[in-house]
Length: 224
Image: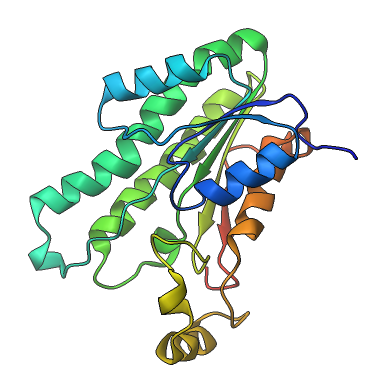
């Protein structure tokens, strides 16, 4: 049976949350050597430790999530603003900055960031979250251009309405109120399975995506 990532060395962050379980399972089934990290990436030292443990890499899957900490604009607390950016924005930059030198030396590499479609449209009462996710997306776009000349493809999956325990747990998705919300707001009228995001991540981690550079791919059933 053919495997699409045979022998590919992958670092997967926040492997026990968000898209981590689905991506780790699929990548492993497809032959990748996955270093599934559950470490908190609170500062540079934590990122350095994870990269040292992972060793030489072909692919970075920056899977980063934090609940949106909703608040009206005038009620945003500094600590929530900082928490969102500390969990989503700063680790992404530090991870990419850390893996790039070795990828440049080998003349190839892949960075796949699992971000959010929220900043593509904006969502009321979660402007701090949209800001952090928007910063991630902007970083991927610009970094992708910088890295393209080194044959490193850096892209993002900007998702929404995908089943996962952080944002769309089973109890919420199965409620009648949420089903009505889906029918009004999502053209496909359903949520995606986490395995669908994993398949897109696998494509972005494979040689089949070599011509995609700095793309933030909306994955939201037509919502974005």
